[in-house]
Length: 298
Image (tube, rainbow, N blue to C red; front, side):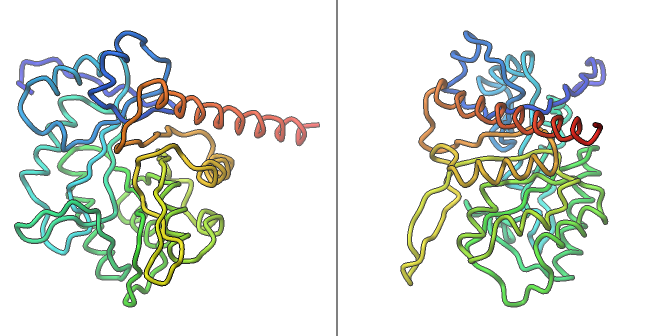
């Protein structure tokens, strides 16, 4: 952004549901102007210079708040953060002033190699220090608070000495970052590792959650024939994810909630239907809280 350009103030993301922006939906969005809280964009899709992607995003930014979600910074990498990638993230934050900015608790690069997967990391004192250092560096570079997303996992590390929820709480305490609670990731990981998703949620540092993600998973079997869930983002949100979401907003209250559907993307009316369902869930939770408050006041 040039020194003579007007500074654009971030549009706050309301405590409502939104979804990821897909270019194939652009014309329908402009024509219908749907009533939803926000759109999320993946930072890596807009790191090029100008062109149709940025023209579409400018038009979208004029109508809706944005959430900027990074998938390639590799916060959990044992090596240094990619400084060019970090600069591009900072530029996008400056250019579009998203109301929320988030990244993953994962790693996806090593030396000069970049992987297509968001890979897990062991929860140790050493890993904690490295992740906190990278978050501090990121927040300083972009000049704002970041939300960190809990991962979906398929393996556990024998060397882990810290429970995941405690690991996240310690990160928040050290860095001042917030958390992005991915409810689908809880269900995926809990099923894959055989623990209770509600028990995990009860230990989650819910007071630091600034955004929630919902998505659909795919099902498979592992080598032993056990049920294996995959965080595929290719289908509607499943019933058990909706149920755990209701528990989460009962604990936290309404927060910006994203419907993630990144593969086998449906038409706009189908995707918007999922957004409206999340809005209804938040409204129902708010009504229940209000009713409880009235009963306590009597």
